[in-house]
Image 1 (tube, rainbow, N blue to C red):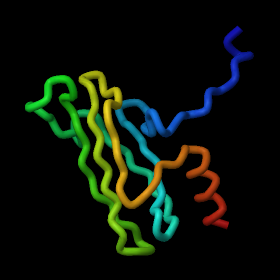
Image 2 (cartoon, helix red, strand yellow):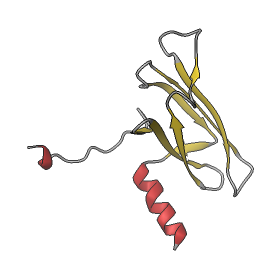
Image 3 (cartoon, rainbow, N blue to C red):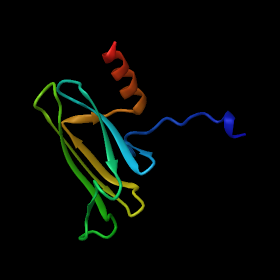
Image 4 (cartoon, rainbow, N blue to C red):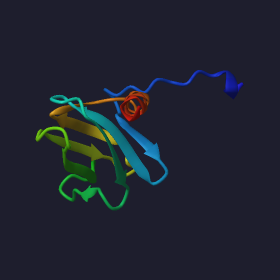
Length: 110
């Protein structure tokens, strides 16, 4: 029965993006100061059309700067036509799970 199944742990080394409706959400933290980030990427709006490469027609190229340090986090990713991840990289930070992000933001609010 379906309710006896365990929840699968997200493998961030394969796909760090979470699908929420018409958005892809990614969680990461700065490797310098440890600040946590959450980014909502809207399908059809935030994605760049890559006409030169038909196997990966969509890509992301974003730069994030936190409030704690001037370190730049550079997120790049390539997606298939069905928004499945083909390649991704994050410079200046590391991907974290949704659970780790929520746990650390709750601790910061206390």
